[in-house]
Structure formats: C-alpha cells, structure tokens
Length: 166
Image 1: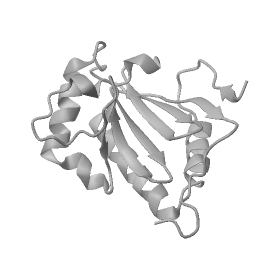
Image 2 (image 1 turned 30 degrees about the vertical axis):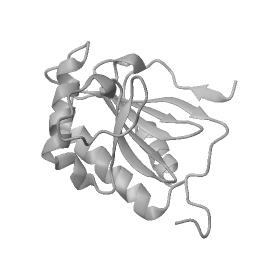
Image 3 (image 1 turned 45 degrees about the vertical axis):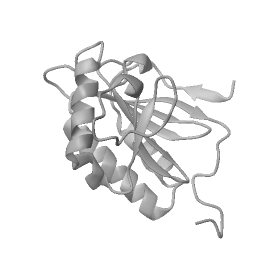
C-alpha cells in the first residue's frame, strides 16, 4: 500500500502539528506561509470542525468536516507547487452569482487563494456560508475540532516549482 493511515483516535496531538510543519516544509517558504495563514483563517471560520489532513500524490490538503468522515467535508484547503486553493466538495451545486468558482467537474469547484485575504472576500464568504448550509451533517455548536492526519502518500509530486518555472 502506498500510504500510511492514521489511527482512528480523533484527538489532536502535538504530533499532528509537528507533522503539518514537516508537510509545509516541502513548499517554498512563501507558499508555506500562505498555507499557514489560510489555515489560521479557516480554523477561525470553522472552530468546531475537524481538520482532516492528507499529504497525497498531487496535493497537500486540509479538509474541514463536522465529522471524521472525509465525505462530510465542507471545504478543503488544497496546495500544490502551482498554488493554493479553497476547494468546495459539493461546489457544483452552490449558488455562485459572482462567478468566482473555478473548475468544471461534476462535483468539486474551487477558488484560488493568492492571499489569505481572499477568504474575507464577500463572495467567498457567501460561498462558505452556502456550503455550510448545504452540508448534510451540521457543524458542532461548541467545542474545538480535532486535527487528524488521515493519509500520507509515499510518492508525491514536487511541492516546489521547478527551477526556471514561473
């Protein structure tokens, strides 16, 4: 099997944070800082959600879910060498009057995040609120969500742009 699975223990551990720091170290420092800033803002938006973390072949992903089930994820922070985005798991069915959602898949849509400030844009906040309303499982009303390292792929695409790539 090409990935290691985390235990089913839902509690966040100091090891979770240590591993996230290790995952971010694979990115250029500016990109790692952007991912960290976006994560901080999303944690403020979703304080009771669980963070489900994947360091997969294509992307480093932190999903925000009311449960520990990936299928309940409302939004995900997704990062690769070419940038950072906010992925809406069921984005194809979200109202998007401002036309900010990108992608043409049957289910997923995303917004590019060149800055964490994009998360404060009113059109993006409206999308986030619509995604929360659309969620099949409500977010807990109180408490603090856990951080769970769900999987780490043994093979991964480079997290930094190739030399000379722009």
